[in-house]
Image (cartoon, rainbow, N blue to C red; front, side, top):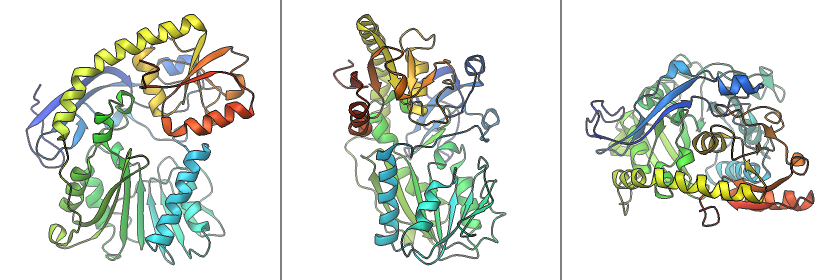
Length: 400
């Protein structure tokens, strides 16, 4: 189905709808402390469209006024040893390979500040930092003043902060007008034109190619390919130095710098892909409903053998719970190792979030794993805790 809207990146009217969902929770990572509040959470619609010209994917029904990133928002992932190790390697690569040393880092969307702390504390990095995030709660400075935090958005009012390096991880996908964010970022660098800029965001081609239905949710209103994010940066006045796929190809990592002649100075050239984003989106459109029906049937079978839990109370787990078990008939609970989420409830469905230590008490026999990247870590945890349950990868042949 075509739409009358325009692409926020290239202004094209050649847009194709490929996914629609009604009344989904607008927040997946909100910490909700009562079941009634969880089921009565704010909702919105998904109308995911793909631009046939630049490949940008966005939610055509997104309403930013429905969202609120405050102190109850928690998308922390480094409770996981696997993800924490990933962050450590990313920091090491930035310092040792990219030469991020002896300067000032600004992080856009710093969350609770864990990543900035890793960078500043890296041996002999010589770094100081300023973190911007409206959801930040905590001291204004840490590490003897080496890191400052500001509970606000980073925009063109922040030109007084002279940055040598800009880091922005998993923020741009939350922004309905990416060009505005990037243009404001460039304007904030007028006093620091030599600053190097690094962005990380999910790769929509990977999501579509692997039919990852739980990676489409309200918070992520803007999704990119390597080509479309490079285009967005160039249009906003940056020269793109490099774009690569990381974290098992699930994420895009981009490096850019301030430029007067962005396209002429960019050194990145997108590789030709086997399938266009439009083709991938149309293929996805044909299979989603069938996959959902198969998963529900399989979960009913598993429940005949014992109780089933979902592993992971982040955005992926919350999205899947709402897709296949809105009435809490198939999942007994949702497991998460983040202590801040344990005892709370999944937005939309109201599933209880539990600690792995509660598996035996609740007589769970099967757990569904959302992201296979974490399988080895979870298997080790289960072994150490002497927990004998079946762990199935969602989307694998086992669950189908």
